[in-house]
Amino acid sequence: MSTSLDENLRAAVRELADGAGPAPDLAARALGRGRRLRRRRRVATAAAALVAVVAVTLPFLLLRPRPTPPPTTPPTAPPVTVTPSPAMRPTPGADWAGKPLVLPGDWVVTRAQVTGGSGSGVVLDRGRARYFSTDRYDGIFPAPTGSLVAVVQEDRSREVGLVDTATGRTRWYEVGRALSGPAWSPDGRRLLFTTQQLDHFGFIVVGRDGVKKTHPVDMERFLCTDYCFFVWTRDGREVALQQTDPNRPRSESARHPRRGVQLFSADDGRPTRFEPVPGDPAGPWAWSPDGKLVVVQGQQEPLLVETATGRVVNPLPTADVVWVTDDRLLYRRPHGSRDFVLADPSGRELVRQPLPKQLVDLEVTVAPR
Amino acid sequence: MAEVDGEFTAFVNERGAALLRVAYALAGNQHAAEDLLQNALAKAYARWPRIRGDAEPYVKRILYHDQVSGWRRRARRPEVPLAELPERPAAGEDSDLRLLLRDALRALPPRQRAVLTLRYLEDLSVEQTAALLGCRTGTVASQSAKALAKLRQLVPGLDERTSRAEVTR
Image 1 (cartoon, each protein chain N blue to C red):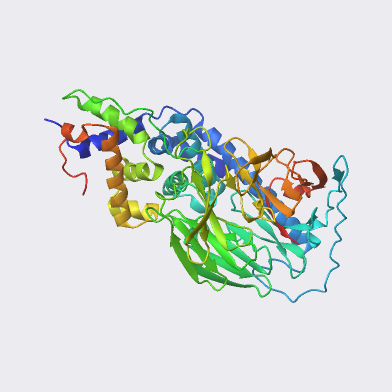
Image 2: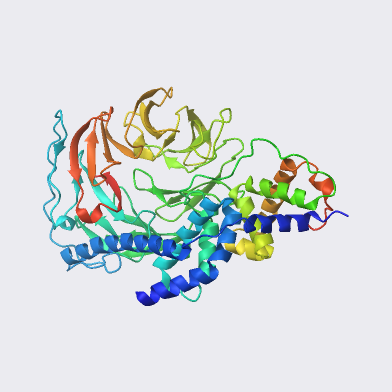
């Protein structure tokens, strides 16, 4: 007599689990990884501590707003000079936290935190033109303009907090389940979340007033496998979703092949258009200002491609780039990541800007100055 | 610090094997399971003063969330494709059937495998599974049903080889 499917399934799951072999030194290895994680957090804490020293009269601004100090003289960005070899800018000094870190192309560092969030971080307070620290949140996401900072906490996984650095006021808003981290629209007016809630894949747009709109997306119609997340387009009117090419073989040891990105209206979720680009744009700034080019993470390497045709123009060192003008890219060097570089679209480096050593091991967010 | 290290090491030595079984059921192979578990343990270590005494549920939550939450996973292994369908089992051999089922389980998407792992390895109720995964009970049921449909697709003759009781409850 055959055993019930339920019993067989239970036995199969347990036999699958029994396949786990011994893991020698599991405790020692976990301890080592845990210490590295802790050290990275300490780096962030050290950077934050430095900020606290520099801004001794302005501690924990996110929590306790203070009157605006006298305006500081904004740093002057040296003119970008095109030379055969990259022009090296000096490493910022110990007082870097007292003024905005201006990068080539006139962008600024707005946030630094351990990759993946969690732990102390530093945030640019644009109103006071200096950095301050916070260790209260697991993720901090300053808007690219204005005074709002989106914050998330692991124990409030369905919510997002909006901290106004101008007033110190924090408001929490319910967003949804199974959320990605928030992504600000380029104008800093709206937040975008990908929701991977089972059977309810889609995106959620939240306004600065907390009003949200949820837009389910049919994953069978708009096939996306592997790594799927919505990103803003540069004009902030649409969001884009990676589209898997169903006609090419997929391997779990490589990125899944893409046939392009499908765009949706950010206002009503309506599918709008399709761009046949062979990879994933990292965010809104991956599109050139004129919209003709976009940098994507291709299946094998980062690529600069034509938006309309998907034609590959040339490979690039990283897909995590921002276009500062129609012919200049700003990115963090993937090898030797203490430097940001301004490069032309071919990847030729023009200007290098080292980061303060306290930020070298941290994930850094940049925005237009 | 020494006290924390000692407590943490004792915890891993005591519960590591059990946690690795869960990780293996979720990840489907030894390397990915160890990576998944080490990542969860490292997070636990970094927060040890806050979670000591409640470490195992914390680690399990991290395991499931890291495995299911695609946007958080760095590993790029959403599912293991089977190049060909498993061969049909010979009649009367439950162990062969379970072997095929085991291979088919590896081919399930992470969410479906997580639901089955919680239900059948950890013996959690639908409600407990939903609470841990942060979804509704109906979603757990639908994921179970989808998982079963996929298993039927991957293991031809599955229903002929078993009685159908209980599975869709």
